[in-house]
Amino acid sequence: MQRLILNSWALFLGMGLIMLGNGLQATLLGVRASMEGFGTTITGIVMSGYFIGLIVGCNTVPKIVSRVGHVRTFGALASLASTSILVQAVLVNPFAWWAMRFVTGFAYAGIYIVAESWLNEAAENGNRGKLLSFYMLVSLGGMAGGQMLLNLFHPSGFELFVLASLLISFAVIPILLSTSRAPQFEVMESVGIIGLYRVSPLGVFGMFITGMSIGTFFGMGAVYATDIGLSVKDVSFFMGTLILGGFLFQYPLGWFSDRFGPIKAIILSCISGAAVSFIAMTIEAEGLAFYAIVATVGGFAMPLYSLCCVHTNDYLTPTQMVAASGTLVLLSATGAAIGSPMTAIAMDILGPQAFYGSLGVMLSSVAVFALWRATQRVDAVIEEHGEFVVMAASPLSVSLNPDVKLEEIEAAADEDTEDIQSSFAELVNDLENPQDEILPN
Image (tube, rainbow, N blue to C red; front, top):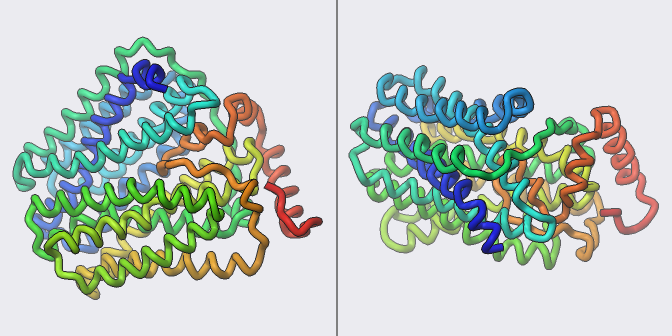
C-alpha cells in the first residue's frame, strides 16, 4: 500500500491542491456575496450553479475523454476551472458568478472523472478500498485546509481569488508531468432513476436528500456563519469543523453499518443528525460547545452518501453497481442544486437559524422514510451486506469499491443499455415477488 501511494504521489499532490482551491473558493464566494449584499436567496441560487454544472459535466465529459484522451481533457478542464475563478474576481455580480459556478462545476466533474480513473488504473483488487480511503483523506483534508486559507487575505479583495486560481494551476503540473500510464476509459451505461428506485427506494430517496444537505453545507454554510456575525477567521473554522466532523464520523458509522446493516446506520445517523441540528438552533455561536455541535451535525449528515451507496449496492450485482453509480451521483448533484436555494429561501423568511432547521427537516424526512421502508421489505442478512467504504459524491468512486473486482468493471463496460435495463427489470420482479424469506444480495 505504501509503495502504491508513493507511485501515485503526483496524483494525490495534484488532487490535494485542487481540493484546497475548491474549498477556498466555495467559502470565499459565500462570504463575499454577503459583503456585496447579494441577498440570501440570490446567493443560494448562485451557489447552485456549481452543482448544475456538475450534472452536465458528469454526462458530457466521459464522451470528451473517449475522444481526446485523459491528459488533454484534464489539462483543458483544470485551465477552465482556474480561469473561471479569476472571472469572478473581475465581474462581481450574481449573473456572472452563477455562470462561472456552472463552469467550475462542469470542470470539476471532469477532473474527478479523470483523477479517479487514473487512481483505478493504479489500484489492485486487494487494495482499492484502502486506496479510496486515502484518496478521501486527501480530498476532505484539502477541502478543510482550504477553509483556513481564507485568513490569508481579506475576502473583499482579489487576492484570494488569485490564490484559488494558482492552486488549481499548480496542481496540473505534477499530474501532467507524471510518468503514470494513462488509463483505458470506457463510457458506462447507466440505469434510469425510476428503475433504480424500484430496486432501492431508500437508496434513491436518501441519496437525493443527502445531496440537498451537501448543497446546504457548501452553498449556504459560509452565508449562515457570516449572517450570525462570525468573523472571517471564525467562518473558516466553522466550515473546517463541519468538514472535519463529516470525515471523522465516517468510520464509527461505517463500523456500525458493517455490524448491523446500512439501513439501521441510516436511521441512526438521520435521527441523531436531525436532533443535533434542531439543538444547534438554540446554541450561541461561541465557545467549544458551538464547534462541537457543528462537527456533530456534519458528522452525522455527510456519511449518508456512503451509507446510501452501501444500502443500494446490497441488492445489486457488480455490473449493476457500476451502472447505478452514475445515477446515484446524478441524484446527489440534483439534490444539491435544489438544496442550496431552498435553504436560502428558508433563511430569508425565518432567519439564519433556518440553516440548521432545514438540515433537521431533511434528515428527519430520510429517517421517517427509512423507518417506513423497514416495514415494507426484509433487509438483507448482515453477512451479505457490502463492506462500508468512505466514498465521495463523484462519478467513479464505485470503481474503487472492494466489492467490485476490476474484471467486473471491465465487463460492465461491454454491457449495452437493453441488457442493463433487462437485468434491473428481473431484479425488481425478484424483489417484489420474493421466493424466500431473505432477499438475495
